Length: 174
Image (cartoon, rainbow, N blue to C red; front, top):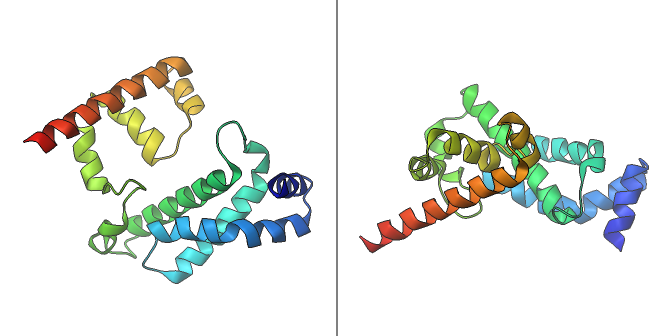
């Protein structure tokens, strides 16, 4: 119930709702950011502020049918952190070797390992997986980009996941 009030208040641009949102969901967002950006407190705080602003600006994009509000907020923060990390690496203000250990998703798979795992997929599936799971595109966006139905995209991703699981299980058996 409190979550619904916060969302409604934010949609009405109520600053009190924003304050309650920050108090309630700020720690969750901060934890998501810290998982990606462990090396620089200033960047983490900047990303947290950007994430809160992104939620505020895009509150109408939240769909309770797709995920919980808490998870949606954490996802926004995570993708903002990943974008900031990419920016830092691109501008060479951070040595990639220093942060390599922190480039892990929630399942604990390192991005270098991710590239290795995705090699078993064909090129188009690799692109889809990368855009979907690393870059944060939605299924709707990818369906438009690749001009396939959303159901077709779900099937393609499902088959790719099965192929990856089978390959990983075969590796463990060796």
